[in-house]
Length: 394
Image 1 (cartoon, helix red, strand yellow):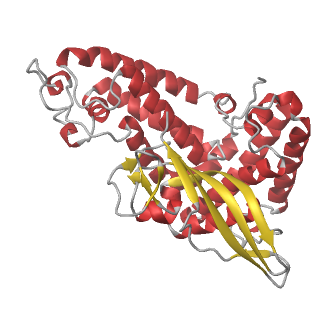
Image 2: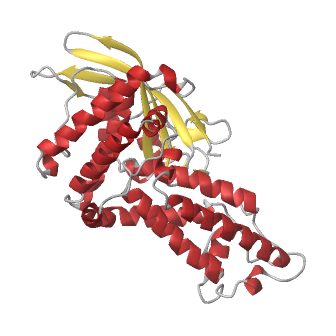
Image 3: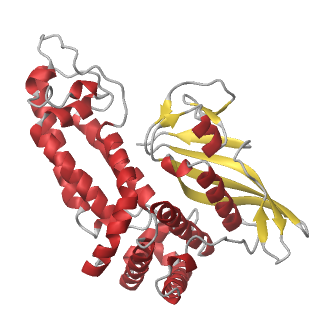
C-alpha cells in the first residue's frame, strides 16, 4: 500500500480550533466510555487473598475511583502511569479526529481496539482482580495504550485503518490519496467557521458524502473484490473528489454555500433515503448514539408523483443505549432482543448496546415529487422496520 502524507498545515491547524470546540464534548464523553467499555464491576471487593486492588493503586482514594463502574476504569483512575497515558490517549484521539472526515466511524474503530486491548490484558468483563495480578495487568494496559498512541500519531494509519473498499482504493493510489487529503483539509477548514450546532450537522453531511460516493462509484458490497478489478471505480472516485473540491473552492470561504442548505433528491433512490435518514436522526439527536455506515437500495416502486423505496441501513453504536428505549425506537426503528439480535416488541430488556455494536434494518420510505421535479421524503420516523439484525463488536 502506498504511503500518503495527510498532515494538516499550520494554517489549517489554526482553523481547526473552532472544530475542536465543537467536537470536544463528544470526544471526551467517548473516551470515558472507551476506557472500560461499560461493564459492571465490583473491583473494590477484596479477593480471596483479603487484599483489595485499592492497596495497589496509590491514587485510588484521592481520585475517588470507587465511584467508577468497572475494573479497567478504576485501574486507569488509581494508577499514576495509567492516568497519565489516558490523558495522552485522549489527545491522540482528538488529533486524529481533527484530520479525518468520518469522525464517528473513527470513534467506533477506536472502541473496537479498546475492547481488544482489554480482552488481551484480561480486564474485559472482569469484576475483580487479585492484588498480586495488578502489576502484570497494569504493565499490559500501559504497553498496549502507549503503542496505540504512537500509531494514532502516524497520519499513514488513517489509510491503514481504512475498512472500506473505497478507502483502500484511495490509499493505494498516491494521486487519489493526495486529492482526498486536499478535500478533507478544505472541508474541515470551512466547517471550522461554523457555530457548534451547525458544525455538527455539517460534519454529518460530510460523512454522508462518503456513502453517496461509494454508491455512485459502485463500491457498496465490493469488500472482497480485488483492487485490479475496480479501475473504473477508481476513476469515479477521482471525479467525485474533484467535483466536491471544486464545490468548496467555489464557495469562497462561505460554509453556508456548501453545508446547511436544504438538500433535494434528484431521484427516489438510496441517496434520497440517506438524506431522509439524516433528517430523522437529526430530529432525534441520534448522532449522539449512532452513525450510519451504509445505505443500500433493495427495491423501488416509482409512480409519476410518488415513490416507495425499500432500503437496508447499517448503523454503528457510538455511545451505549438501552436495547429497548426511546433512543432504540427513535433511532433504529425498533426495540431489540439482545440475545437473538432481532427486533422485539416492548417491554424489553434493560441491557444496553455497547460501543461499536452494529445493527441493520430494512425499511420502506415514501417520497413525493415536488413542483421543481425533485423528490421530498415523506417518512418522518424509522418506525416500523420490516426486519432487522444486530451484532456486537469484536
